[in-house]
Amino acid sequence: MRDGDTREGGTRGGDTAVIIPAVNEAARITATIKAAAALPGVDLVVVVDDGSSDRTGKVARAAGARVLRHSRNRGKAAAMETGAEAVRLLDEDAAPRHLLFLDADLGETAVAAAPLVEPVRAGKADMTIAQFSTRVKLGGHGLVVRLSKEGIRRATGYELAQPLNGQRCLTRAAFEAARPLAHGFGVETALTIDLLRKGYRIAEVEVEMAHRATGTDWRAQLHRAVQLRDVALALATRDPLITENLGRRRSGR
Image (cartoon, rainbow, N blue to C red; front, side):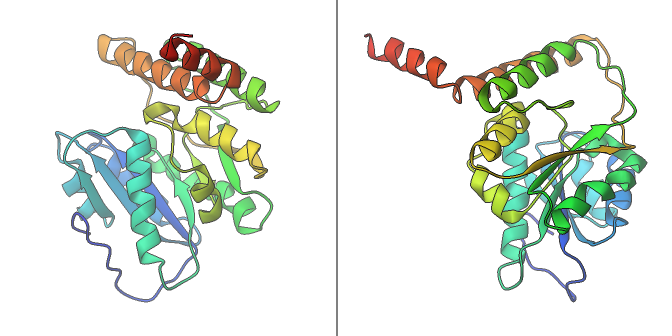
């Protein structure tokens, strides 16, 4: 798919579209795409190249994905919305596909995502969230996880084991109910809160998937700082007391 091209060739053969936001993942995107395309019921893989400086988009297209590209990095939530909108246009005259969001660095482990789709397909959940059975050590990641977990619990009474996990399957109706998505890396936390508050059913599903290990260099620390900021912002705008206090400060009361 060229930028903005949403035409689909052939006969529809499944009920699930995979959407993969990607930034500078040329080294791993092929394995992720091929594993995702092999999932039962998946007939469409969309990669959103979010302003990569490497060959992510070209490699993804060569691997068989339909590719959309942001000319600059706009963040994870924007990439998710771009991919979902492309699928919606393709589904205009057909039943809406379920939306399975996967991270680009999963590699071959993306083939284990099938259990995420099954409860949604069976009508038992409106959104599933992956719970990785194998943990990869992510330096400094615990602070952001704790913030998200506690924020979700305060807002909804619901406690997740892995609240920041981006591997999620949603019905189209659930996705639309959560729009507009929270900015950047606050998207997972906000998705959970917004859908629970609106009465949608959420289930965590254990899967044998794993990210590439992240380090503790300055780039990794910067990424976590941005993630912390985005999660805090998503929570602040969903906490009535915090929002009220911010409003008072801005109005000078």
